[in-house]
Amino acid sequence: MNVALQQAWTVEKFFAWAERQEGRYEFDGEQPVAMTGGTNSHSIIMSNLNLALGVRLRGTQCRLLGPDAGVATIGNAIRYPDGLVTCTKQIKDARTIEGVVIAFEIVSPTSVHTDHTLKVAEYAAVPSIRRYVIIEAAAPGLLVLHRRDGKDPWTALALSAGDVLKLPEVGIAIPVAEIYEGLELIEPSE
Image (cartoon, rainbow, N blue to C red):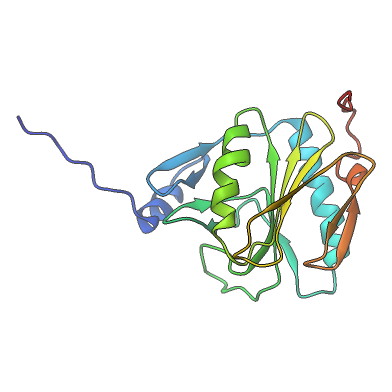
């Protein structure tokens, strides 16, 4: 019996394939993974994050990019965080971003496992990433994973609406409530 062997995916094959697709995909190192559309809450949070970071980073060498900016992680995996900050000059036609210092993911019901488990390990494997901010879309709350050095393990910090997200890597701070401005979210009960 003849069985057609499927050729393994490479990063180059993924990029060539992804350019021809209508939807958005990440590459888990083995195959493309569809990225689902977000909710209105997701869009509002992303807009607030773009505004808050954009204003505070203006005039610095750092910039917020995403969600079309790729990050090479473990092996051949390519992830597209909702937002990322880099302070490194980029090559115009590069397919991935160098020198990412902060990655942001907004959690949706379909991305909980990936954002809280897989990407924690993958972003930890990128030495330049010092902070990974997981933003909850259903209720005001952030899980901030941070480290001093790219070889250190993550330290976790949970923030709620009354707290301030400190980003010492780029010298700024953002009130968590500003990220959720315009949303009527229910504060989790204690």
